[in-house]
Amino acid sequence: MPIRLVIADDHTVVLKGLATLLALEPDLAVVATCTNGEKALAAVQRHRPDILLLDLRMPGVDGLAVLRTLADQPDPPRVIMLTASIEDDEVVEAIWLGAAGVFLKELPPELLLECIRKVHAGERWIEKQSAARALDRVVRQERGQRAVASVLTPREIEIIRMVAQGLRTGTIAKQLNLAEGTVKTHLHNVYDKLKLDGRVALTLYAVQNGLT
Image 1 (cartoon, rainbow, N blue to C red):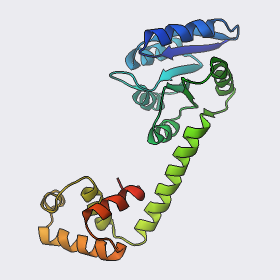
Image 2: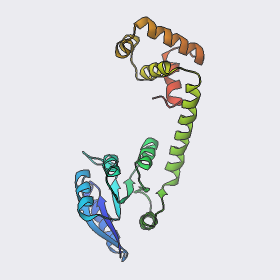
Image 3: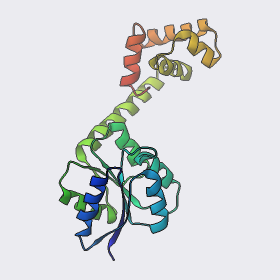
């Protein structure tokens, strides 16, 4: 029995090209093509494919939004994300949401065929460079957050996050229902504990340690 696929991509040329490519393979069968996330979800419900080839960036319901919806459904298809480029945090989110593959469109077509077959066989296919960067980011953030938690109180961490968002002391005080003087005291303690001088240094610290 051939591997049944649904393809979702908002670029018609890409969509038709993929369908034509896959139709040449006797062990693959394209059961539906879709131009947006809503149609992709409907096609999955109707056809129950083995694999969904899903463009990451589509107007309206994008690829990650489709993944989030499928994560709540019973027996979803295995998903391969297709993208021209992908940010590290998008790789991490896609993996956490259950994507079995992340495939860059710039790679040779024969690798896509290999990717589909491997994913159907229960394996994962994550483009190595993107996966390595994403994993490194996660490790650095987790280490940073553990280190921060050992030094700062939960309230101090909360205030650091708000400072990193560009909020002023008065705004932070209002949002946390604190006196402005209390917020200033917390910030003084944070600067003292972390040996930092000013909001710019504190914002950089927040970014480097995964607090943004």
